[in-house]
Image (cartoon, rainbow, N blue to C red; front, top):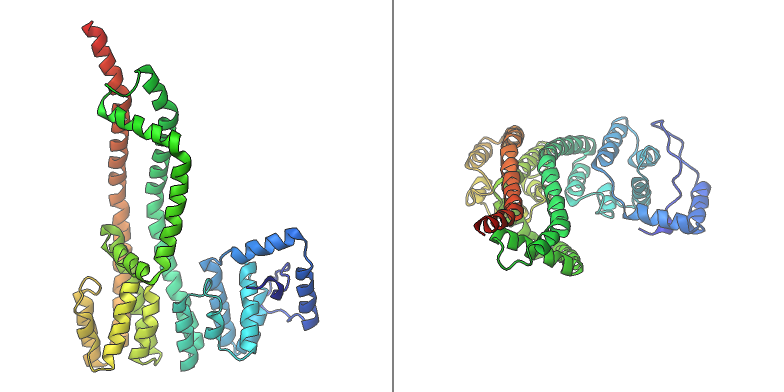
Length: 396
């Protein structure tokens, strides 16, 4: 986004419906932004680089849906909502939406100009709503889906907070021991030559950190940068998607999230009158995993060749459970695929919540075991040489 094209956004209103600012005031604000001091320019840059939380995006879709349901035109609704959003970045994005729609673009096309705020899945669903004349219903369903996903993700994050805190604390304590304790221990015992293996390992790690800490930090930074670049590439994104699904616990949760979203959105699109082929193409973006996206796009292509959806998805039970395949087959034969998909979505949502609850129960003993192993290793590394020295003294 160009900084000069955005008006200054210092005021926020608590009312739902506000008067639209005059064009003269908007232009005046643009001039103020162009003539801003260094602090304002830095502030604007930080706003540009910031994101928009999911809660703010959901509020935008929810209020926009309510306004459209009340009979207000799309363009006027966005203008009225603009000052209701407390996130300044979202206000700027809404200014872009207004300009794009005024120039003749649809809402979905305008949203695609801000891919960091509106992902392709949301844009595709909005586009389907615009084409089917059910934009309000689509937005309402989009909010519901994202709220459900957000609820599940918060539960997963809540489960993961405990192990993350514990592991982070252990790493910090280990680094403190390696930097401040182990070097003194090495001096006391006159080097690592005759020390026990755990102590030698700790001394080696301590020397490596103290002598090459800069190279370690630079190496970690380079690794993160290369990993992000690789992950964004076409082959890297696909390989990463496959890797995530192969991780024992993470893959199970990822599969549950994907199937829950895919079945619900696909069922909703079908119930809204979207053709099956187009619905599959839109749903492929909802998966947010290249393995599932490619499979759904292939299924959409095969449907045009006369191959049923159930037959197409049945060749990979790692991606689609046999139960789901059977439900799809029944839905295709009974012309009730939309209802079947929504029922499957409810099942996967409940199943995912149950797995997350079970994961929280399993996580505690696993973490305690991890702590015990780390503590035992460090105790052995520190106390074994002391015991060894005592034995030598007693022998003399």
